[in-house]
Length: 106
Image 1: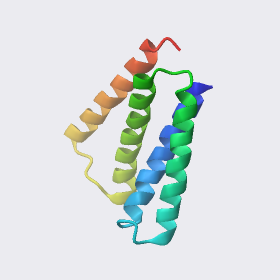
Image 2: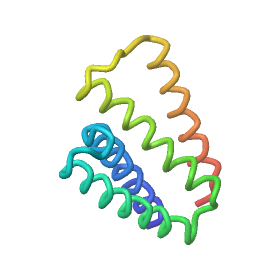
Image 3: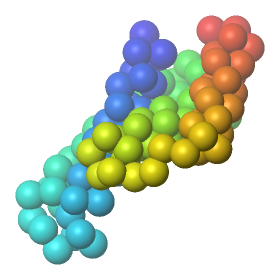
Image 4: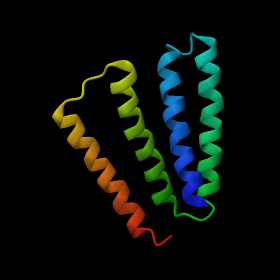
């Protein structure tokens, strides 16, 4: 169950980082509210996952899911560059996440 909590914590991290971008420095009300709510949900789910998962593993995977997800949203929704070097770099993050999952023993 901890891995499910962690996965959704990462998904909510992607949501709050994306809506934070849309809030334009917290000057737009709706994206600002969505950012705050999804940030709290993300942290709560991370805390639930950390009940059983090691701190380093849980935190690294949470931030990794957020980083990779935000990278994808940036390209798809905000038109950010999808250069070969950026894509290879994100693939290295994914490889690290897989390595952490496989070595966690959970």
